[in-house]
Length: 375
Image 1: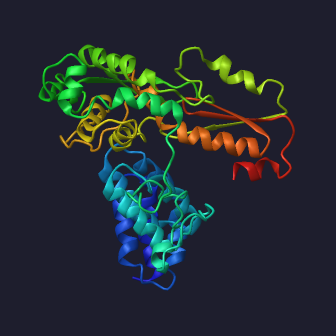
Image 2: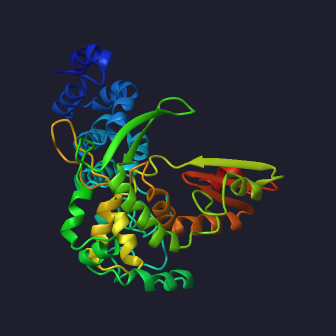
Image 3: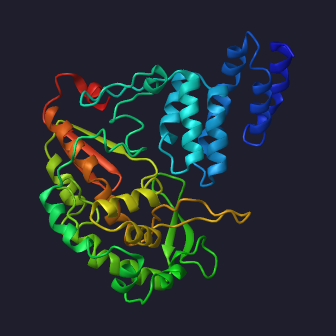
C-alpha cells in the first residue's frame, strides 16, 4: 500500500477516532516502512492525540499501556515527550516499560539539568532519556548505593519513635483494635460493590466536568480516622502546605501573597491517583515502619478499583474521599514543598501549596522573567 492509499484508508476512520483507535494504530504499524511514513503520522497526529490522552487517563492499565505504545508510532518527538513524561513513572510496571521504550524510540532526552553528585553512565543507551537523579526517572529504582546519605530532619526523627513500634501486620491490627493481621483483609477488598470498603459517585466540578469521589463505608472510615488521629496527624507538614492542616486554611494560603505584583497558580494533575500503594508504603517505611506493617497500612488507605470484566487494578491509589488521603499527600509532598520553596527564594518569589494547587507570587518581576521561572 502506497502513501495515498494509506491516507484514503485512514481518512474515514478519523470520523470516530476513539472507536477506531486500534485500527488506525494497526494500519500505521503495518506501513511504518514507507519512505513518507512521517507524512502519514503527521496526518493523524492532531486528530488522534485527544484519544491518546483519554486512554492515558484511564484507570485500566491496559488502556494506558496501549496508548503509551502507540505514541512513537503516532506522534512526533515534541508531542510524544509531553505525553510520555506523564506516564514515565506510572504505577503500572507495564506502562512504565512502554514509556521507557517510547523515549528510546523517539530519541528523547530530558531537559532536567544533570545532577553533578553522580557520574554519568558509561553506556550511551543508559544516558539517553536522562541519567540524572532529579529527572523523569527519579525514585524508580533502588539506587541507594549511588545516592548521598540523606539526613533525617529533626521533626521526622522524633516522629519515627512512634512509627517504629509498628513492624508487622499484627502490630498494625492491634494498634487498630483488632487481634491479627488477617482481620484487616475485610477492609482491603477491591472495587465499590456491596461488601467492598468503598462507595463511588461523581460530583460536578466548578470548572466543568465531574469529579469521582470514592468514599469509604462506615467500618473502613472509622479505621482510617484512627490512623489519621494516632499516626498521620503526628507527622509535621512543610510550612508551605496549607490544605487540610489544623490552624491553616485557604486564607492562610492566600495571605503570604497579599500585595504581590505577579501571582502564578499551577494545578497538579491527578493528584490523589498518582500517589499509589508503593509510594505510600515507601513513605511509611521512611517514617520507621517495618516492611510488613507499611504494606498493611498502605493497603488500608489506598483503593483498588475493579474493572467491568472483574480485573482488579493494581496497585491501589489514594481515594479522593478518604479522611487519610489529604494527610498522606502532605507527607509525600514534604520534599516537593522544600524544593519548590528553595527555588522560589532563589527567584525572589513566595510559595504556598493548598492540596494540589501551587501558588507562586513575586513582589517584583523576576530578572529572568516569569517564563524562565516556570521552565
